[in-house]
Length: 423
Image 1 (tube, rainbow, N blue to C red):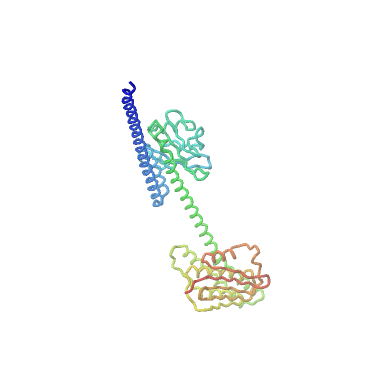
Image 2 (tube, helix red, strand yellow):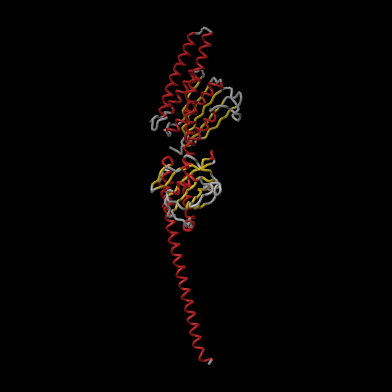
């Protein structure tokens, strides 16, 4: 009996093993298919991110890119529309920026969303539908805590049953929100795609930050240009009118001594300086235009500055060392402005009797020295105005070094050196 039962038991065991293997094969096939789908989804998502980054790199208009991200996110989540919001810190609220509705991207002023008139508070579930740290999903079939009923009615009128809000987070700052609307009542499929939605929101955050940095750079450029104009006004008009005042004061003293001929000479010098100021003002206005074509001849311009000193009563001369060669136009212009500032300081403060300008063309560098025998000063002390600061900024702009040597009662030397790397 025992021998007769054994074959049947072996067959049963074999059938069980075969059934188990078939189950294992089916499970393995299902797992392989699941991995294949996941890989295909991940590849598609990665491709979507790469394409969006390409758009970000090529699209100069940040609103166009943000609209692209909103549209892609709606398509990814099989939504029927969406919105993009920015915070309004002054009112602790969120303001609508873009709405994707009816397959059309519109700006806030074109939208019928009630939030355009009545901005919504920020704070997430229980306070509003604008979370500050992580995505949140809202089912629209019942009242939503934190969402005004008029807003829910508007969204429902578009066929929306589920709303996903993804914050755009930069560090600890929430820079905006992307909301995706879905007509599906079951949020599970949307929940599975939230990580991809967060990645796309990160790209939108990057675009916002790039726009911010671009605006900061623009403001910095405006400030730099304002400072340049201020320096030019100081280094041309203010300097010229200093010479006018010095000559008019000298004319006044001459008249009190009944030296009419000397007074007339000073008045003529003042008239010439005033005309020079007018010419400088015209040049400055033209310089504000791009490609004005104005170029300074440094040697001739410095010679004119030396003659200006002579007209103001101080002995001055220009000495050129070495063989002249051309420098970049901006370098020659800045060296001239530095010399003008030195001369203005000499006229206004130094009470110098002698001033020498030395322009040295070396094989590897050009240097400009302005030397006076005036009352001197302490370069380390605080000085008001644009003078020393302006000269150092001008030298830095062309890659030159500037050194000031002076002491009370010992005159002053301003030495500027511009490396040329050889001719």
